[in-house]
Length: 225
Image (cartoon, rainbow, N blue to C red; front, side):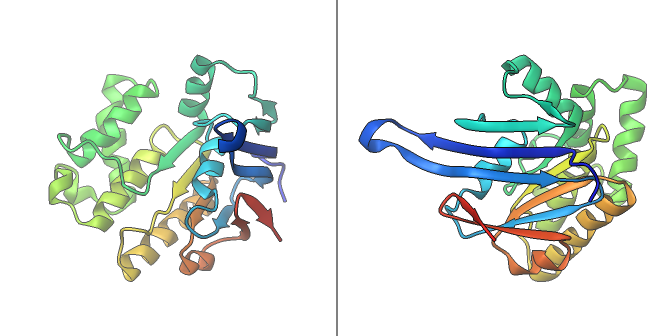
C-alpha cells in the first residue's frame, strides 16, 4: 500500500465527566491511502461518525494523534484546522446539507469560493463538477426539485470542489433506494481510482462492501479485526 495520506493513531473520544463519562471511541488506529476506498462498518451508535469526524479534523480526539500528509495536527488551533479542512478534505453528509435557497450549481460554487477559487473560474468549475456526476441538465434546479440521488450527486460534486485529496462520506446511501445507492457508490469508487482520491465511507449498509478495497469494523467504539 502507498504511504498513508491520512492516519489516526490510537485515537479515543470521551464525553462527560465522572460517573457520566461515556467512551464514544477507544484507541482507534486507521490508515487511508490515495486511490483507496476504505469502508468503516458498524451498527448505529458504534462510533463510526465520531471516527469520521476525527479523521476529517472536525472533532478533536480526547487522546491519540491524527496525521494528514504525515503532519500531526493535534496541536493546531481552530484557524489552522479550518485551513486543513479546506485544503485536504471534501465531505459528503448523510443528510446532504445543501443550502435550500441555492441551486445545485450555487451549492457547489459556495465551496469553491471558500477554497479561494477566483470569481472567473467558479462558474465554469462548478458546471464541470456537476457534469462529472451526471447533473449538467439539473445545475439550475433547487434542492426541493431534486431527487434523493440527485441531491447526493450534488453533495459529491461539492465534496470534489477545489480538488481535495481526501473524500469522507457519512452513510452516503442511507436516504437512497438500492439502485441509486449503488450508482452513488460506483461514482465514489470511480473518483478514487480515476482522480486518485483517498475515500473513506462509514456505513452499516452491506452493499458498500462491493466498492471497498478494504473493510474495517467498529463495535462499541472499538475496532475489531
